[in-house]
Amino acid sequence: MGYPMAMNLRQKIQPEDELIIHDVNAQATARFKEEMGNASNIRIAGDVRQVAEQANTTLTVLPEPHHVISVFKTISPSTLPPPPSSSQSQSEPQTQLFIDCSTIDPLTSRTVAKEVNAPSRTFIDAPMSGGTVGAKAGKLTFMLGCPSEHVDRTTSILQKMGQRIVHLGDQGAGLAGKLANNYALALNNIACAEA
Image (cartoon, rainbow, N blue to C red; front, side, top):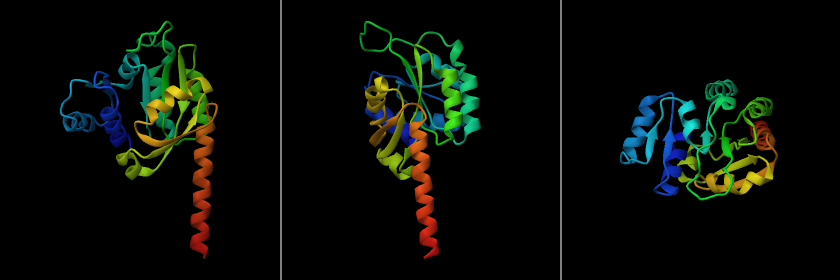
């Protein structure tokens, strides 16, 4: 899902904005850069720490809770330098956002958030619905769990990859909503199978 999401993001962000990418599969990142015309505004990072050090917004899309824990241990947010300045002129430094689009359990997400959150950093859960087809079409639905002061900025980022962004409450609420949606879908499938 991350690959088509990154394609939509690169196509919809400002041309002068740089997209820094990383994947454990180096062939995937090389293919991504090639498919995007080897654009100079796409940089391949050697690891996730490099992405976090150089970006004011870091998006993660990972398969399982242990992957999320591992990535954020590698990033080691408490040792990060101050967030890079935004291209916009601001009197105060912009909060560095870590937007995790993984569908994991809320407990793991809250644990990672406690490690990440600081005055200059915020961890946001934004699991998505829509599958690979929705990711390719840029029509995902994101269920957002974050403080209200970050909703507008987060929404403007996620709208580049999705069609609907629903703020469900503070950190963890996005995942709770996504899991409730998954359970309802599973119950519906079971009911249909019984019929």
